[in-house]
Structures are given as C-alpha cells and as structure tokens.
Image (cartoon, rainbow, N blue to C red; front, side, top):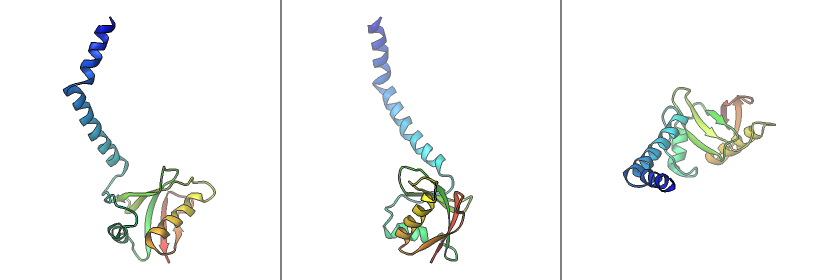
Length: 133
C-alpha cells in the first residue's frame, strides 16, 4: 500500500508535471503583484536613483503629491502609480496609531525628494496629499 502511494507521489512531483507547477507559480506570483497595484506600475528602482526621483517628480503638481498609504507593511517602498485615483501607492512600515505612519511618510518622502514635506490633507486617511516646502 505504501509503495503504491509513494509511486503516485513521485509521479506528481517529478517530470513535466513538476515543471508545469513551477511555471504556474511564477505566473501566479506575477499576477498577484499586478492585482495588488491597479493601474500603471512604476518601475522598480532604488529609492536614491535619479530615474526613480524623476519618475516621482512627474506626479508633483503645484508642489503637492497625492498618495495612497498602506500602513503596517514590511518595509517602506513605493508600489506604483494608481491611474484611477491619480496617486502614488506607497507602503509604510509604521503602524497607523498615534501619528506614527504620518511621521514615517514625512520622513520617507523628505529623504527621497531631498526637501521638507508636510501633510496637507488626509491626516486620518489612507489617501493623503503632501506639500513640498
């Protein structure tokens, strides 16, 4: 009985079936990433690169920048551009209590842009507008 089960297990874990599973995993992870960030996606670049900074500056209008913040994330990073909401999607590691996430947003964008920023709208919302001073 065990030999029949182990042979069945071996059949499904090797050969073309295993390769098909690995291919499906690769595609499903890509689809999951795209589903998480709707709209046009900003290319993955280092936060300090010139191309990255230029990509961010494209979306600054009248010294303001619209954001959609996802607090309590594993790390601070820009996820992409949300075409529907006309805002940059950003994940922030800090929790959304006692203004920790807001302070982290200010600190993160000040570092990226090399200028002081303040939150103009959305102190208690995930949708924020920051002003570049």
